[in-house]
Amino acid sequence: MIFLIQYDRHKGRIVSMQTFSDSDRKQAQDSLLTIELQLNQNGTDNEVVLLEAESEGAVRRTHRRYFEDLSELLNPPSSISEPLLNSR
Image (cartoon, rainbow, N blue to C red; front, side):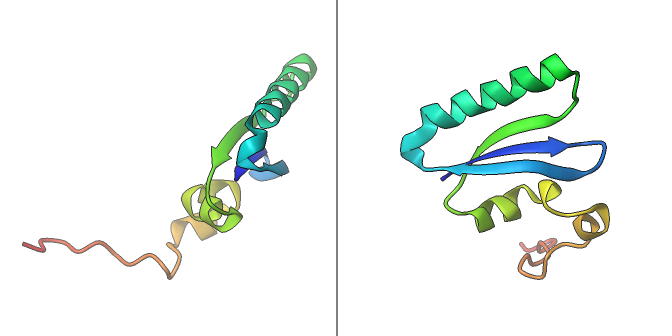
């Protein structure tokens, strides 16, 4: 799956998120370009990204900053174990 995310850095939140199938990559890229051109024309400072992942859950794990606030980001999810130190 392909995810097109528009993110407002100043507000710390997603403005929009669209999903595309892998076969619709060209449409996703065209949508990204359209959004970027509109934002540029309006002088809006948002981040626009295309991310590819197996599922939305995978994107939420690998790109947490788009979906969680600062307090959530400072606390790792319970599914991630702490790295082992000095495990020789």
